Image (tube, rainbow, N blue to C red):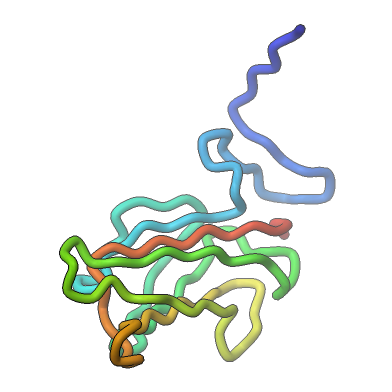
Length: 124
């Protein structure tokens, strides 16, 4: 068995490479109450769009507006763990995506303390 050691991965046709430590096209861990990005890969910025609503811009765009988003949210206490909905946002752009967080008991938007998003798809 051979071992392949690389620093970056770039699919045929992609202009941006992916660091081996973050093979997903992008990921973000953020605090929704302070709008602070705790860690990320391929995320240029976070824009607060109101209670529980966040817009993210990619550092390197996706190849199309069609890509997969997986999200996870919660508070670091048991008061309101929250549920999430995610979408590419109103513009259906290859440069941004949107995460919306709601309290699962009241169905109202909330700013969760701990939130994450992972993006899978082809980079431009």
